[in-house]
Amino acid sequence: MFRRMPIDREILRLAVPALGALVAEPLFLLADSAMVGHLGAVPLAGLGIASAVLQTIVGLMIFLAYGTTPAVARRLGSGDERAAVAAGIDGAWLALGLGVALAAAGWFASPWLVRLFGADADVAGQASAYLTISMLGLPAMLLVYAASGLLRGLQDTRTPLVVAGIGFGANILLNVLLIYGLRLGIVGSALGTVIAQWGMVAVYLTVIVRHARRAGSRLLPHHAGIRSSAGAGGWLLVRTAGLRAAMLLAVFVATRLGSHELAAFQVTMTTFATLAFALDALAIAAQALIGRALGAGDLTAARAVLARCLQWGVLSGVVLGVALAALSPIAGRLFTNDPAVIALLPLAFVIVGVGAPLGGYVFVLDGVLIGAGDARYLAWTGILNLVAFVPMAALVWMLAPRGLAGLAWLTAAFAIGYIGARAVTLGLRARRAKWMVVGATR
Image (cartoon, rainbow, N blue to C red):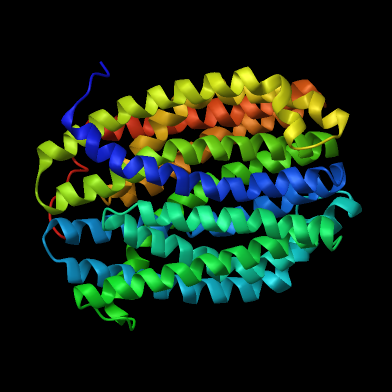
């Protein structure tokens, strides 16, 4: 079943570098969680709330990458590299505008957003401090999304890997200096990440300018291009809103279980995100290859990418799931030295590992349909999947006890129940041919 095939070279050429770049994003949060976690359960719980809000805001803007990649790839597949680069530059300008507006609003709204979770005063104070400072890096986060989407559409995943690696290394060094050296605590963690993110933007801008000059493309924004990027991203915004709402609901339930459970759930969801980003490397390869194939009108290639990426996705999920389950007895100590939090984590890690193969299936199909520009379907089914998750979360809130059982049931509801609902809706779409629309634009 997994014997070597010609398409493997193309998939792995894009997926392997994309893996490093994608994993770097949750590794930023993993590093923050590990360093803040050794400050105590209260700062770690505060980071859990702040990161949930921040990831929701940034996650809703993922269309800046996921919408740009297929748009650029389709134009590249049709043979118009100049238009491909121009589409990516328009996406970057849109990212900058959205980032500045959201950062300004978020700076003032941070305390109010934190209070929505109903956490203890000490936890809320830590969360508000981290979130307010992090807003300074929000435009940089969105520019990184748009720039990486441009390069992926150009079939280049190596440059994002290099930039992400440099940013991750800088983030760790800055966090050590600011958290422990200057004793700034959770504020130092936020500052270190913000500085690292703007450094990544500086590198990306240099690369984009070089591509524009080589292709003869403009650097200034084009209003029609920005409107096109915003319009294409609207449906992806709805799709992502459903996903982020499910995550926020899970964090809300974890808050009601208690501070230790919330801290443990923060670690659990960060670990889940790391596995998801690792598996999403295949989805990124699928986005770029599907977009290029449909832009060139090659339906046979599109079907081959779908089939092979699914095989790789499930197999990778099995490998990662087994590895996490094997490390579950000791992995918690990497994040915190609080005995109560450590005791809650092993079973939750095993549950995330069991659901990893299902995640591999889901993330690949998601990437295939995004690459095809089938965003309307993803938006509507994203809402349906959220509706399916609400009663699962409600049952945990009403019936599960605090402690190990409550965290385990909540983790299972999200990592298996919610992801399972996504598997059904995505699988039904992929079996049909309606998503395969050819041409330089959809």
